[in-house]
Image (cartoon, rainbow, N blue to C red):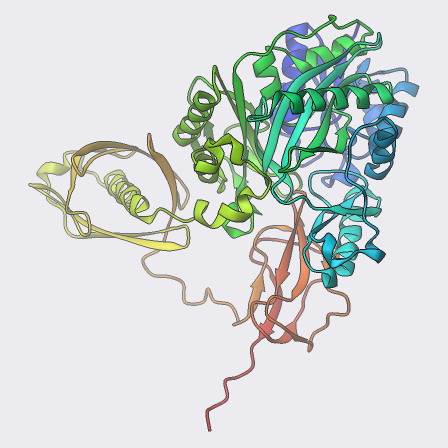
Length: 638
């Protein structure tokens, strides 16, 4: 019997495992970096052990420290969570050697699937269909497009799409460097890139008594940077024959390596209906809640049951309904998916959906870890109902703090390509991102008016504004790259606002404004956090930055300056690049890493690199000067 569990991870998955442990009467132990000292998973654990330092390499990737922490805290089992060391066979072996129970597959099974290249060889021998690898030295134009992939790790790291043969060598080097930095293993391989393919996976669960469950399919085709954004179960619009083929292949994969515990077998489904093995994740997946919802199971509880040596039932329960999950990230999709940092003042979802979150109100979103804030999951009897339910819940959510991808999620769920399930494929955001991130400025303008009215009332000493006429008022807010200047007066006859002839003010308070817009009553909740104003309504939300009336004239930078768009670490500088070099527009200069993602900094125009004040390994804050590219002076016409 397991009585105390240490989770070798952080954030959302640690809280998820702790929740099940509490229900089972099992004590919980957290580990934490210095950056996570006040994190929710630490506060909620019965015992917490500090891992000195901030960087993952010094903390959550130190298996020796985690084993030592488990022994010191009196834990008798370790749950690997996901990420970090969750698929590290040596760590699993070290846990067992210390006399602790490992809530995961046996180390040999992890080792067998740790390298994608070795996993493919094993699956080919087991009869599982897969894509044939491509020799980069012999690749031809006819084989394009190609995908360069890291042999170790996951999450889209070390992955490059190649559409021109001339780019293959450079992308190989870039993928090798990123994979080595992320996983300590620079091995990469090349395979065909299937255009229009779907990412479909099968959840498996196996015990030590020969039982293997295949718990249906999930579709995870909506991805950014090869990382999943929206997932659902079951995968829609799959023919029964193909679904059976995937289930059989997943079970074959599990039995081929004597698997135990929870795992996921991932496939690429081509437009012709053929499926190919991609990889096997020997751990619990981020998207496991959609499977839990349709099977009414607790996969973490079942992981613990298997680790205790108990048998599964002969067959799993029958699935019911449909579930959809959206990953809420602190990022700006319109700015190259740049991660965002700062204080999360509020995260609240309406009732009726499941929220799995690693953060709570008041937490700080830092630069050291993944920008995932939460997963929002909706279940309903049918797919249409589940999608509608999730989109509505996200739209009504109150999320105050750093910018998020919430609006992108809502628009994605309502996009015709998504609602028409047969049109799903991994190229969704390549085709639709620009339209999905286009600001709705007409709607934003009304929200800005509500913000200005609430702000004026909050600063006024007069509650009975209708009997005290005001002078002309003006307020400017920044939103999605656009400045909104709101000009209005409150008179005895009501609101007079420029550019809003059809708007009537019905009621006003510092935290709530009710307007009549084109004959419709609209209620706006207003919250202020420093110079940020969040305005929420049942039909959407907007966040504004209040601009000063008189900008600081000294707040300027030299023309051509490239500033850090987020806090991070300079992980690479273009080989041979030095001050005085001539650079071309769009030429990569350096790469920043923040929140487990690399961000390429390119020259904004052709010119001369006149300054490069950073070096590899340097940590920079948002707005820090990275480089200066001086454009050639204009030459007068003859």
